[in-house]
Length: 382
Ligand SMILES: Cc1cc2nc3c(=O)[nH]c(=O)nc-3n(C[C@H](O)[C@H](O)[C@H](O)COP(=O)(O)OP(=O)(O)OC[C@H]3O[C@@H](n4cnc5c(N)ncnc54)[C@H](O)[C@@H]3O)c2cc1C
Image (cartoon, rainbow, N blue to C red):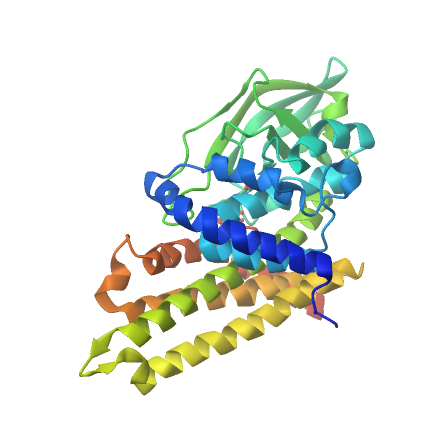
């Protein structure tokens, strides 16, 4: 496995580092405090081609490798986790169902604006009674008037409620016409479709700049050309999309761990107690050394999953392992980094406290870590 970056990948990393340091790091903390999604920053990322990072040029993207995306995410997430979370949700689960399973007309109509940074994509899977247990979704699609009527609701949907959002690609249970089930199918529902409404932005402990909401569908009618992919394979299409999402949450976790390591190291060198810097105490040194070591292990798993995807290999187990390991390392490292900061690290105006709050979601979104265990155990033959 050769993980040296190509010239193109390295150029993307340089671009993201510059944008993250000059724009995101300075402007995003305000959005976190005010709990609104900084779409101005996302639009600027769109102008740089970043919203179409995994989409081929033919459909308006920049056709970057998954390894390049992971490396770019390490830079964006270092500056702010909410912007990085919105970006990764758009790039993977928000866009990939259309790229991987849509037809050319759907790609032209919905994927191109997403890839060109003119709109933000959302993925509607979770429901109030169906989180990990995705087969329990109740949102139902029935054939009517040459199209489909959709009734139900979705929970915790990211990127659907901003002024940049185009709507949502959702998963519904398909009615067989006799009140029974004919499997699951995926549909695009554009914003402003009659019967499609949403709740207010949810208030989380972290990712406060990410727009996440409940969505409601009350007799929403969409024509046949809004059905994405195979009308019976919607669930497997969504699960395949989530595999890429797991690599990206792993990458987001790496960026958070690097951020808290940098913060803890700088603070430990500066802060003096008992007449010496914290960094001179062996117990602090060991914390920092442990974080650096675990980060490197998580990094290798994440790049390995990305490399396998780029090579066209099966990466399901590796993506689950990467997400499991990297998110665990991130939550633990954030806690250790707060510990190094002492009381200061508990104040919300410090970056380390914000990263601490942001970390927990990494173990929950795109399949909880318990679900990653199940995926890995199944791959082992359990
Ligand atoms: C900030 C945020 C953004 C999100 N964005 C999106 C989005 O854009 N689109 C979307 O569709 N969803 C989104 N989600 C939803 C997310 O994917 C779910 O929260 C997640 O899949 C878990 O579902 P749940 O919350 O219903 O928890 P539950 O499934 O109720 O799980 C609760 C606990 O039980 C455990 N558990 C459940 N089943 C098992 C089992 N079989 N074995 C062992 N343990 C089990 C879980 O691991 C967890 O610890 C988002 C969530 C958050 C917090």
